[in-house]
Length: 336
Image (cartoon, rainbow, N blue to C red; front, side, top):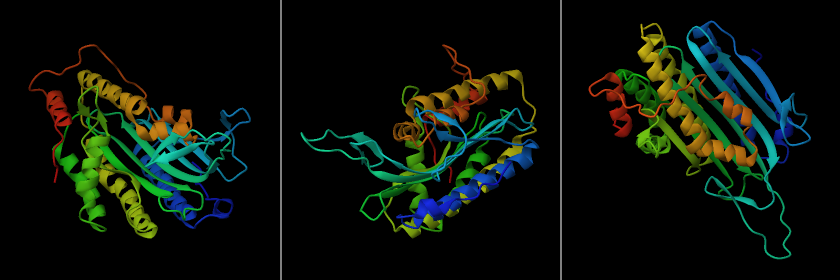
């Protein structure tokens, strides 16, 4: 696995310093967490770089304009069944007429005779979706990102987003407590209101309305964050993104060798079906990335579970461990 070297010169031209600073943090997270996962598993990530082709489709290769699209995947490992990882850092231009309401891209109709021009932007993001082999070890997701319109000097023209969340197949309450505690400690260094605010945001965001259940036991999540100075929020992003490894990896180490049955694996595949449903149907981040061209379709598929299963009637037996998990997902609790 090749360590990424930032290419800040082209990205810094006519831009605020923040793009280079946040890119460095997310590149470091991209590399360091991949190395930690490789160490646990004993396998190596595969890596592919992408660029926009002449016809608008993605094709293998490195861009010549400073844009970086990299996907990594670890498949069929000893500990991890599939880990999908994506890093992007790019300068681009929104389609003419596209603007934002909050962090939602919207199209505006031009006035008669009005010439519509695209707005330049900078975007960078790192995302991991981690699916262990053992059903007793939870799935986890982490993503941090930064978006900037123009030079970032106009009010509302930049924002941060991200967070980390835990999706157990079988619930060990001490794991949920640990995951939340580590993230709370990171949040409390900046504002004691961050954790309860972002925990609630996470529960509401990672929710499947057609199922009436949360995707997992949560963590923290936020989007369009711009209510402090750039430097304050940059420091928070750096701390919270670094906290994910401490929050998640000890759980994997603890659960990866527990014995399990075929029935446990079947339930795992059913729950991974829910995970796929959320990404494809409900994830606003996926929709945003595809609409703006920041996210490659291949990158979305890279983050889907390797195996998932659906059946018409999949409700667990009352009183079972599976039913206990489902009750928590339908009624999110406070873990701390």
